[in-house]
Image (tube, rainbow, N blue to C red; front, side):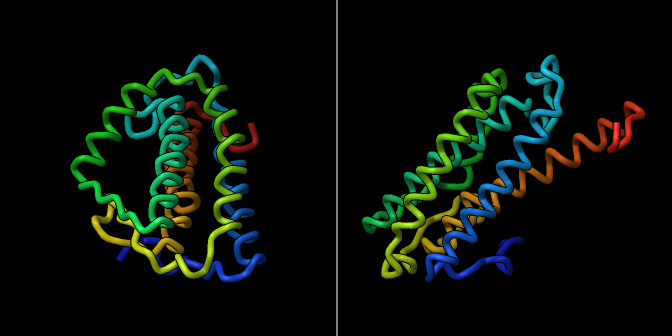
Length: 180
């Protein structure tokens, strides 16, 4: 079982989809808030499991783009299977590339990606919800309805949690409090 399986929602109605999009917006705003609290001189210092802020934001944006491509292929009946090993290698490779990714460019990409993703979610036909989308980290198929939630919400929440925990630990080490 995936840790987020109990959180899946049905996306049958416009209001269901609007709720998902609002949650996606909220988590991205929270990621932005954490990112903007990191001093600029520390943007490219490894901090999140060895990833810099630039690498983390670059990873999230790239994952949005690749997830969107995978969703669009699934809508057309194509299920792209990538091994978890290849997925991990790709993540490690792109993390090195994104280690010095310009943070302001990544923040702008966040702003540009969300409307494109929201448009696809709003236009999804219920008839394609049960199509398979392979999710490499779990090495299993998800339904298309689940995959949009995993890629565009749960993945962001997972990394937001990492960012918040790391920043809290760093603040504690530096003798700072939440209100500083």
